Image (cartoon, rainbow, N blue to C red; front, side, top):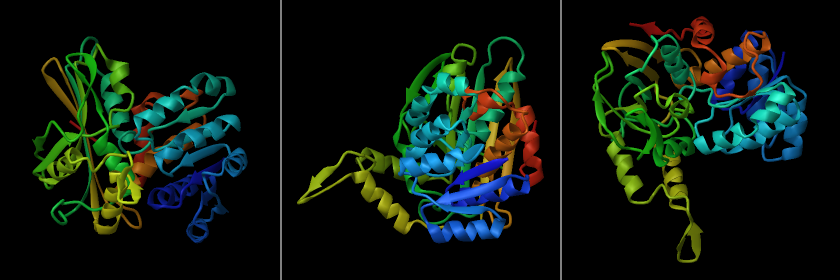
Length: 369
């Protein structure tokens, strides 16, 4: 199977490694020629220098492959999905932006007609956490479900600085989660709530106490799909205590605003200033841990699925839990185990009973109780 990985960063690198391990013929493409050559040489892949903003080149490279896994920023999601659709290439990305996913969803009929799968939201959350949540819904008894809850965090193993946090990926993705409305189900009905709100303390043996708060994108399409049957459905991000209120203050001060403002002779968006400051100032590369807890409440009984994944070898826990669910799904598509053309988010495209066992070979294990 000829598989293209877009992006030679930490997630793209992990994706290339796992796809090669699974026997795929991998091409890795990135605008950074040195990075892409080094990554390709390390893993026996084919390097391609590519600017994803170049629509013609993107179409040409995509068309030479059976599957494309996009590990580049979400702002390219519509363009890359469009190229995949036009070239009849299966497509997976790591999503996280509801507006982009909604635009991709409008390609469903054409994707179905072309016999290709376009699968956004294939990372950790949205992605793996939603597959776990959907598995709990599928295995529930008939009738209403009181609650489906998701709590997910990628954290340094020891708190760092006043924020207790390190920069694990592009800060634009982080601020996107912190600045957009959050989709939830309350009292059986779809609604939205403010980001960086609804704080709660979370006990977690070995890692707590932690805080959790509302962030955008984590519920993917679940709130629309399960309105009516599930009475409460919500996603919250886990952080060390105190982190969320600092960013809430930045949000209230307007520093996440994307609209340019004039400062003397210069126009600049406040968010761009914030992103630059975070990129320059936040620490990186300390050992990390990913915590995932998903649970269902029905008829007074609670059923829980949980993952604790630590940095292992060359790859951080966040890179592992983001990349490997997508590469496992790509492999299931290549083998024909998953074959439902159209635009489907990860939890819509694959059952947990098929995907979760595929992760044990890379040491990502789900505990159920």
